[in-house]
Length: 137
Image (cartoon, rainbow, N blue to C red; front, side, top):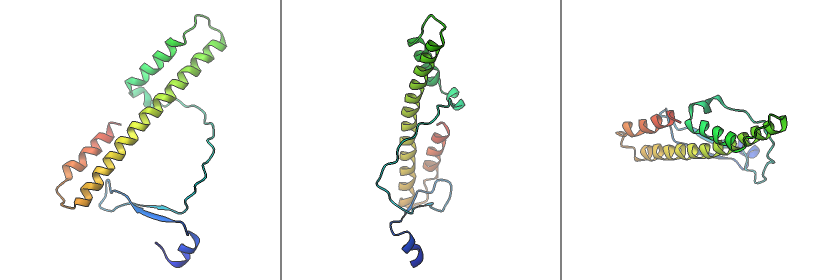
C-alpha cells in the first residue's frame, strides 16, 4: 500500500476505497493498526442537545418521563429522580434514533456505491435522492 519504509512501520495496515458522495474522487479509509482489545467505556457527562428540540418525538419522551415519575412534593431528591428518569429516557431515545440514522446512511452509501460500480453515468437523480434524505436527518 505504500513504500517499503511505510509498510515496515505499519505492518497491519489496510486501505479501503469508500463511496464518493459529493465528489468524483473516492475517499480512502486508511487503518494503520487493527486492535482486538476493547476499550473501557468512560462515563460521559449528559448534555441535552438543542437539535433534539426539532424532533417531536423528543418532546413526547420528556413529557412521558416527567409524568411517569411525577411526585407532588418539591424536595430536591424527588426533582433529582425526575431529572435522572428524563435523562435515561432521552439517552435511550437518542441511541434508538442514532441507530436508525446510521442504518439510513449506510443504505444510502451502499446505493451510491452500487450506482458508481454500474458506471453508466445516468444515475444523477438517484444519487441526489439519498442527499435529500440525509438533509432531513
